[in-house]
Image 1 (cartoon, rainbow, N blue to C red):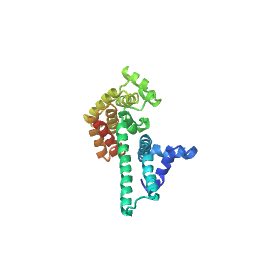
Image 2: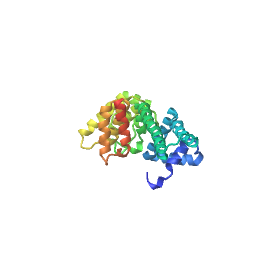
Image 3: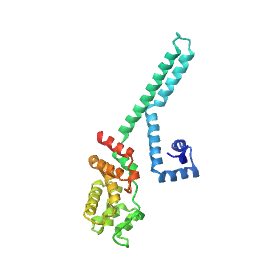
Length: 256
């Protein structure tokens, strides 16, 4: 994190603790909405705090320090200062190792396809359309714009979707309604159509949303190569959204 965000970690902790309210809270949430990096840090802080609360590790670490103070103050058989330092350093290190190990275990077992999907998903905005198949809005586009995702799916099933744009929006609507098989099929059709076309459309969007659909559908062997492809392409529209952390989470899901 750069110098412009110094102290942000402390502010995020205060935000999690409910100590930020009013306009300051609104401003911070606006920053979070515009910064995947801040969102990732907030998620890490939330997981760390939850792990500490869950395992009671804060008390364990504090207990080591308290025991050290009591024993140093009590009249005991003299031992060398060096041995005391070594003894308590090892105890503190053990507590920290326990903390880190427990946090990793907590992160591992608390992961779910839905959580990983949600960490990367955002509803597609029609303003993002960079090309299309006509200037007039279709029935599907109008329904999508009003967040009427059930209506989008109904219209498509009734044969209202006649163009590339409608197919893509229906796929996103299917993701919104957790109909991952339909979304995956439509997005794969879109990518195949692009492969055979000299003018591919919505290709980056389709790849990213398809990867997320694969994740929630537990098709990790399909999701990982696609996510890695996006991450390795600095020109990809969604390159900044596919972080090493996201790929690591998908790998953990696969290993479980």
